[in-house]
Length: 133
Image 1: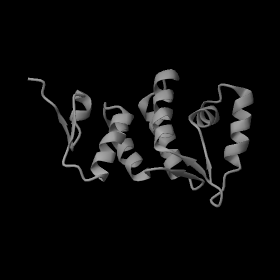
Image 2 (image 1 turned 120 degrees about the vertical axis):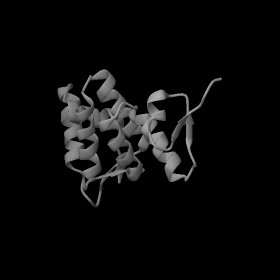
Image 3 (image 1 turned 90 degrees about the vertical axis):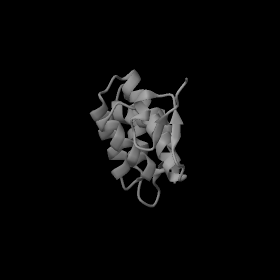
């Protein structure tokens, strides 16, 4: 297994730098089930942020990218169950993907709730907005 950084996945997906895109494509096209690429949760979170904030891609397109990675037989995603839960909330909602990954981690740890000041996140089951009064 080899680890993939955010910039390699981004070059592969966005194709905005021809030289780096070709190198990323060679690497990613060479992945197999016996020698998969590993994507840690931080890279996945950073990738979503990059595609949404820098490349200005709509949520549904970013969601499709994450879904493709989750469905790939040649990619292993750390905390893939959490990523799937976060993806479901992200595509159909307004909360940030990173916040939804935090909520998924809290659920996986069997926390009774995630307390937050984030209004958008607090609308999710299992998250409670902390009152300031």
